[in-house]
Image (cartoon, rainbow, N blue to C red; front, side, top):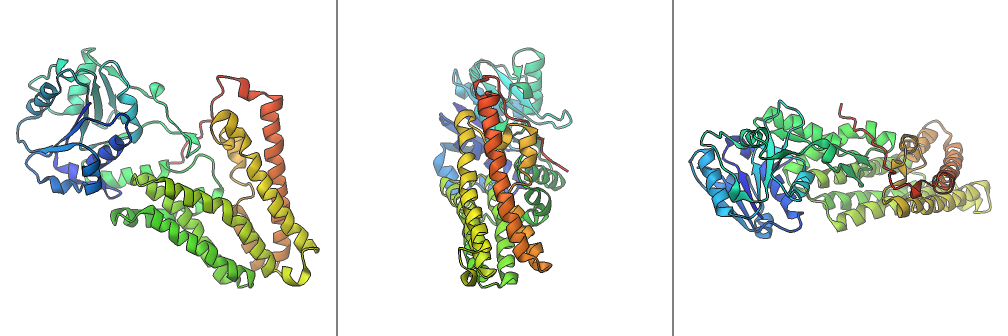
Length: 427
């Protein structure tokens, strides 16, 4: 498969979260199977270095850059002639498309065009299974017009949302595909805001969705521009996580909470940065999700010691509450492993009820402010017992609900069962 990226327009040098649209196309191509046999980037009369494509990307794909001042139709005709009977994916250096589109388009057996969902956005991507068989009109001004002409003449089909597989398991929700035309800095700012919010999970806690985003937004943009790898952010998060433990255990709540909330914000930053800049990795996922699983019970035990567990002992009400938190935390996590074995997706995608409950269940971002308020108002001990009770209730809900879904409803036997579509909050 040959891929052509028309990056002649001056706006092709604009960056969205530190990456030009051309680099975003290349990052999507890196994830394709099979990989393109050749990628041609037409930069017009500009210096290819202005596209700021990293060496690791240039080395990972068979990329050729060309410089030509010829009209669009002539340049495209040359590419299709070069392709012959081979498939061709045609992309525009100013049309920022959903990275998932590339992989779904190239599966087509017929000419297939996809346009921006907003008709006012002159953006498109086009796949031709036999590139050399398509005629290019002399007056074709750019890719979007050419693709629309093919669809109008019934020489190509239009790829629509109803044909798009939009469920993203990591985000626990269905996200329709998007596409924008990037022509100025005002548009890049608009797109960055859209991409930022579209990368939030459909089912998450209220603090991650409503409290932390302003701080995450302020941090992600400069980090992306500086090309800071998200794994570095994760390492700082890990340092804050375990750095808070001795302060909590000593009852030094101010320092402990400052470090804990720093970690909580960075826990959102690294994931957003990875997805927005195509720098997600197995190591990053392991560190991030492993930290999320391991550290909460360590914090809870540290809180108990800060409340006097050493003096009171494990056979005290405080000790039993601590044991209850630990036991039901582990039990809760084990219960949540059952559902994905049948549905290949997270438990909280099953229904809107489950997605809503996810906002309040006993997790770090809920327990942390509960305990903080308890410390502020001199009710830290009472807050700790409340957290223990809420952890028990959370595990009970997940256990009963899982039993209901699998045994009573027998939903896993329904071949048409689909995850709930949790809409993104894009405001």
